[in-house]
Image 1 (cartoon, one colour):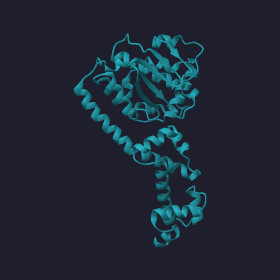
Image 2 (cartoon, helix red, strand yellow; image 1 turned 120 degrees about the vertical axis):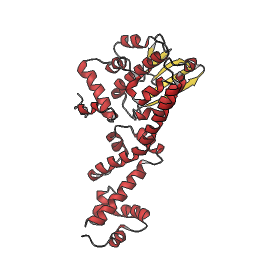
Image 3 (cartoon, rainbow, N blue to C red; image 1 turned 180 degrees about the vertical axis):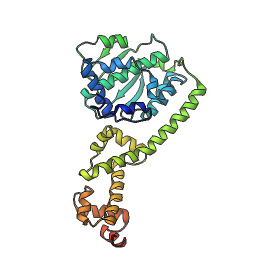
Length: 309
């Protein structure tokens, strides 16, 4: 099942190895099919702990209260899962802890979504009190044939076909102290996770450029294609690039410029051929783009490099 989902089983022995969220979602969906368990993700959530999130999992367990814990999870979620978005909204004494997989079809996201919400509920119980229950649990997808397992897991009303996927509970719960709170350890872990997050922000543009470089020879490179290659939604890819003070177009332009200079310097390909290889609609577009960067046309730049050896 792992290999069919494009995950080599050996990588599971490498705790810091990242797999694409697309492959992760495929594996969950395939597991649900093979085991004939429609709520495989929800069942799995009750057999896991927040420590599966690595450093951030330990960080949120040692926060002073639930509010700080969820806040840090929202802030650092990408250190574990770059494809999910989570947020907390508070209004009229009600807290809504939402989860979203942007750009993913509803049906393919069911297992991953139910796993996330089930794990969130289990985390709050382990952090506050085992008898804790949300007011309601909301899912965007359609109701299953049986919701018995939902009642057993959440112990509260569960509603489907909603506009948001979320846990709803009393806002006052956010101020409750965590049973495992440790201020000293929290401070150490927070600094550690901040360093991981900073490194991810620094490395992400490099990952995008590598994906573009691998794809550019096969034709025009599209944002959606690169996002899928990295296992992200279009929105998440753009969001992470923005946080690194860059954009998809800027990274694409960088790759094209670097490759363009290499082709001009090391090959005898014509300007039209180089333009086509870089995915430009026509040579004139390539010439203008190159000249903006090099302050000289591709032809003149090539001439300045001297003869090809």
